[in-house]
Amino acid sequence: MSGETYGDRGNKDRSITNPAGMGTAMPVKPGGHAHPAPGGPFLIGEAMTGGYGKGADILHGCTIAVERGEIAVIVGPNGAGKSTAMKAVFGMLDLRSGSVRLDGEDITALSPQDRVKRGMGFVPQVRNIFPSMTVEENLEMGAFIRKDDFRQTMEQVYTLFPILRDKRKQAAGELSGGQRQQVAVGRALMTRPKVLMLDEPTAGVSPIVMDELFDRILEVARTGIPILMVEQNARQALEIADKGYVLVQGGNAFTGTGKELLADPDVRRSFLGG
Image (cartoon, rainbow, N blue to C red):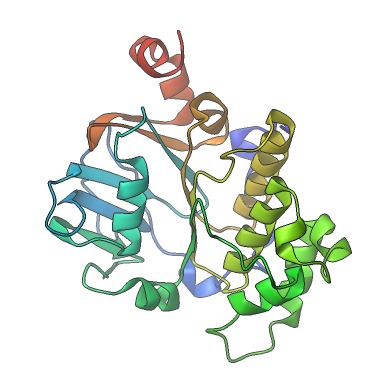
């Protein structure tokens, strides 16, 4: 990765963002339960309990949040409920209790489609591109909710991911795994989101490609877009995270800055291999 420091990641170029998305944010306190000041975190799923359909609860009072200009990472063992927590924030399962707020608005009852219109950009782990369409057509699909001229945003995506410009007329399904992930992220950015949510963006890619993707994620964060990310590569993800959440059995086990969690002996022993 680029090795850039946390403090160097300012909001240097907001051109790809939705300026209306920059809200007031206060930190989530350690211990897994948010107690926001007026305005609250920019995006928060607070005390979420729920599961899929009529099945058993997977989340148990889980709280995750991200503030403007931050990268927040959700890590934990397999089956901990990481992706479920992300999907709950995006509205893909019904909560039995808890709430989701975006930029001060309670969006708990909104569908995923309406959350996209409110400014959520979501990149799922799988089936996140249209393989038979070209790279350019995939990006154009990301602008489906926009009524304005999106060509400038597409140019910004190509600047962020230069390989996509070179392959813009190629079918997305013919690309490498890392390139397909860039297409998926680029398509989400075409909506000019207020917040970007990534579900295991480095799954199945090589360590070299993983480092490159993390560098691109850092570049997206520099534009001012808050990023909430689920990631199996916990150590590497926490290295770029402003905030980290360790989930165990659907609940918050540890919460802190990326540096704090990397230095915590309990987190290191239990989740980072010592």
